[in-house]
Amino acid sequence: MRVMSYNILNGGFDGSDDRRFRSLLGIVGEAAPDVLLIQEARGFLASGCERLFAFERALGLRGFVAEARTTGQNTAVFVRPGIKPLAFTADDAHFHHAAATVRLSVPGLDKPLTAVSVHLCPNGPQVRLRETSYLFGLALPDDYVIVGGDLNSVSPDDAEPEGLPLLPAHHRVRYAAPDGTADRRAVAGLLQAGFVDVATRLAGSVTTTVPAAGFENTEFMPFRSDYLFASEAMARRVRDYAVMKTPATGAASDHYPIVIDFSG
Image 1 (cartoon, rainbow, N blue to C red):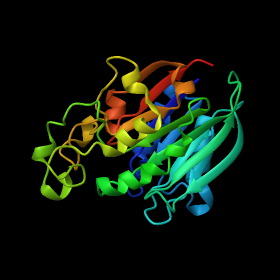
Image 2: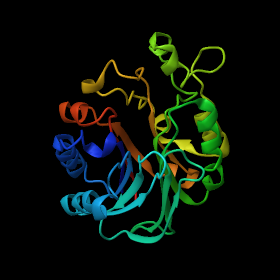
Image 3: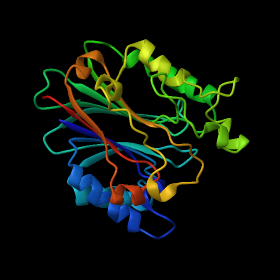
Image 4: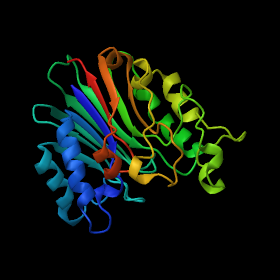
């Protein structure tokens, strides 16, 4: 089973320019995920869900979109045919950009899989710490659970981002602890709850995911902002993890996508 997580930057559109959207379709199609976690699905529910349906048709996937009513940066989970949705919930009460949670019946798994797409608040570590607390209860070691997305956070297992001191103060404060170093509490909390960071479970897999090559000198320092966490039962099934860094992904969004393969 292949899982992909991707922040697609404003739904893949720049105003009415759909070139990034079309490129994103090619990137996702080539990766061929069974479960796709999307962040910044902006506009996917507008105009009678036109963009959502176009995305589904082009990729042969079924989508479940959690509306971020305040920010418009929806999150979503897409699944391939053969994977049966059992339940879907959208939570924008506890999450800045909403969380999309789908319970799935997946061929090869002996019990349901819960898949969550999240995009944590970019504005400050205190907000992200609160948001992650609503995910702790999902970290049941014997259940099949994956939580993925753009966490806007530095892991306690990652090196100190070299670019953090170089950011303008109004951007630096989004990522920094009171002592000026990277605030790592949001990811640390998920790990303490029992989730496994699949990138660090596989030795040597920690790679930066922002900024993509075509979006340098933006609000980001180079760091790993995109994660896939798994319950212990799912983590035992992890076989491969990769950050897709190609010329196409460098231009399609400010984030690189991550792809994870599980047995089953």
